[in-house]
Image (cartoon, rainbow, N blue to C red; front, top):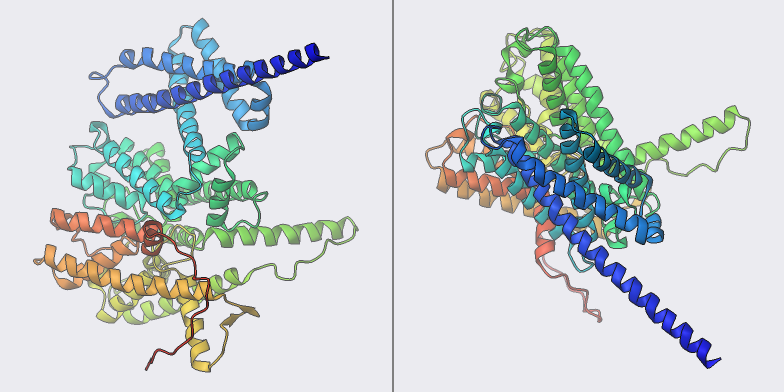
Length: 600
């Protein structure tokens, strides 16, 4: 009996030692794979960004072979020696990606053909990006503030975008570092302000990088990395899943993956449909552009509109003379895309849930089956408040803009053109940044209206900027409650939480204070620029709008750097940034006596 016990203990120690050894080798391979992924992406970026005579493919091909070998060894190690853990941690898409890597590795050993090099480049690039995102989301610590993570991730993408835009093949005649930083910040923060002419200075590669930064900035770095981790492995930490769930206001962790999938698919589907609509709206207007160039232009504008970024690769942007004399359909399409991107992802998810429930009830009724229980509120209070406020603000801006500018900047246009431009210029100031008529020509009252809408912005958790319509609605509802003497603030038979009202007040106060400070700094750094233009430019940068009087290229370096910081703060939110930097404290355990502060 004692011998059997000793044998059992020895086997257990051996098993634990074997498991510890496997985990050690697994961690070493993980670190090695991450290093190879970073080096692989760096090598491919240098190859794509420099002239091929300077960096030929034969110089990076051996390194790509090594990286592919490391990836294959890591996959085989986990399959052969950690099979149970791998099956538990890996989802279907990760199996497909790993299988493709192994297949390409075998083909690369057996086949010598030029097309295999293209496949090698694509496989290494995709796997490297996926693995880095997966590693980032797994490395998040529970003590890291989500607001700080969001801010740092945006800074990293801005820095990377700056370096990419300075590659020789991204621009026609080069670009200054401060201008590369400015464009990169504007693209990631989905603002739209540019210190250089985008259409004239950037090559198709540079425009592709700008488009990628806009997409990353709109969806959020954490959203994209978490999507990779959840879709490909399914083993992101509970902390990271909770953080992403809060970003999308998903009801449960179980519904997080479907919510992420729906959001990403909705974004890509709307951008694809928008590209098709824009293509047919501009086909025939630019005979000098090939069909491929027209599709690229349509895709770029669709992505830029849905992301509320405001970048355009056409000369003079949406104020292009050919577009203004065209059928005006592109302005309607752009307006729809801007509204779709600015309404807010939580509202889109709520709309999807409501439509799904209605479809289920209709399907059950057609099949003559018992109807599922009806949810008492298909559309939650946040959706109702945000949609109603958005509609009222749009209608108010539309009628006032036409009233003030019918014979102003819209003078000389046909009634149809005026109506279309009224819709377009009532939608875009809320954050998109597209400009068809110069704000410098607006009447003072129109300019005040536009600046007010720029300050409000669009929906919370959307691709837009501003203080958000949810915040503005909460402030108005709070004001109504104070004036009417109500104890609680209500909307649609729901009581708005005190935390929401306090956050709305904090956002409004911080927005006004930060705007005053940035505007004062701009007056000091650019005293030769008219104050009216500086006030508009500062507001546009701070609230991620992108409209301008056209003074951005002529600003001094200090003013450009200041606007970069304003765009960054406007995207991540000053309140979120302060909450990430300031140590959070809990309420004292005792209740202090209440007193009144005289307010009059």
